[in-house]
Length: 284
Image 1 (tube, rainbow, N blue to C red):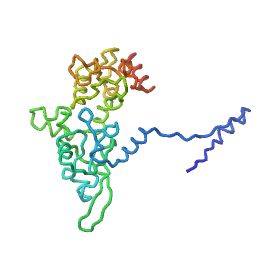
Image 2 (cartoon, rainbow, N blue to C red):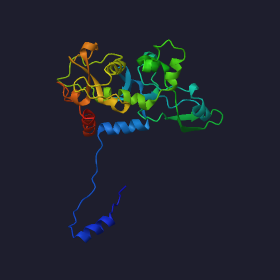
Image 3 (cartoon, rainbow, N blue to C red):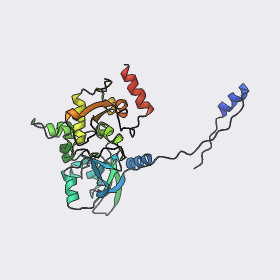
Image 4 (tube, one colour):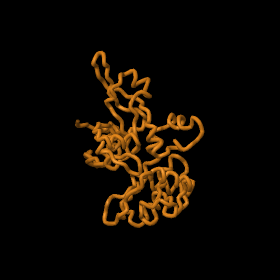
C-alpha cells in the first residue's frame, strides 16, 4: 500500500524562511533474514521436531532461542481459558519429554514462538458441535524443562512446596532475557572457530551460575551489571577457546564489550545502544 506523506506546516515554515526545498523520498528497507525469522516466531511459526535443536540444553530453531507448544490441543475453549493444567504444556529445553518424542520418532508438529507475554495461539475444538476456532491461552510450563536446567533451583531443594512455587512464578520474559546472551553471541562456524565448538549439554545453567558467582561483574573492566535489566550484557567466556571445558579455571565473566575484544571473536557484534549502556555504567 502506497502512503502519501505530507507536512504542510513544515512546508509553510520553510517558505516563510525563504529556504530552498530539498527533494526527498521514502525508501523501502529490506528486512534481514534474522528479522524475518523473528517476526515469524513472534507470530508462532510451525516447525517439525527435526527442525528443533538443542543449544546448551535449551531449544533453538535456526539459531534463535524458542519456546515450543502444540497448537492443535484437542481441548475445548473453556478448558483452554480456565483449566490449562489439563492442556499440553509448553517447552523450552531438551527435556525428558522432548527426548522421548525424538526417540519414538513422533513427528508431531509444533509451533515455535518467542512471544513474551505468556499467551499462545491455540486451536480449540467442540466435540459436540464439531466447531473449531483459535484462541489465546496462557499455557503452563513443562516441569521436566524446569528440572532439566534447574531453573531457579527447581528440583534441587528439599523444602516442601518450593518446586510448585518456582513453576507457578515462572515468567517467560524473565527466562528469555536471562539466556539471550547465549544465542546472540554464539560463534558461527569459520576457519577461526575452535574445533571443540560444541557447548556442553547444560551450558545455559552453567553460564548463569558462573555469572551469578561473580556478582554479575565483568572480570576485566569491573562494570557492575547486577541489575536484572543489565544482566543480558554479561557473558561467560571460555578462556582457552575449548567450549567443552566449563571448569571455573577456563571461564571468565565478561561484559559484551570486553568479550567482543577477545581473540577470534570477530563474529560478535555490539550495537551502539549496548555500547553506550555499558560505557554509562562504567562511569556511574
